[in-house]
Length: 106
Image 1 (cartoon, rainbow, N blue to C red):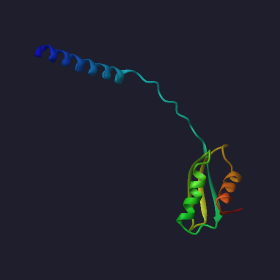
Image 2: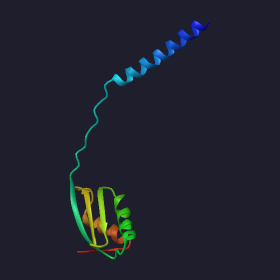
Image 3: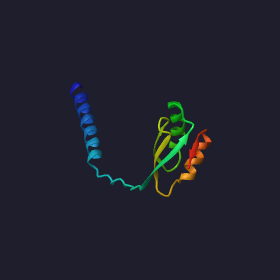
Image 4: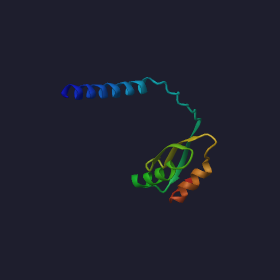
């Protein structure tokens, strides 16, 4: 009886190892790579006085569709963005900055 249990256990372990090996060896389809063209935007923004202000501007912009990267600086009064081409424009960015309480200079 003990030998039968050992054989059953060995068979189960061997079967489990074989099925996971088969899954690893199956070919997967290559992922599609999407090339995104982007523009860099630099805006002069007044009213930011601290890092809290920078965070407010950055958080307001980074969730916008088309915004890839954003960095605000209260010391330089600037917001620098990387945005997807033809997805978001300067006016939309300016409106969002003004909506969170800061002024964009022309």
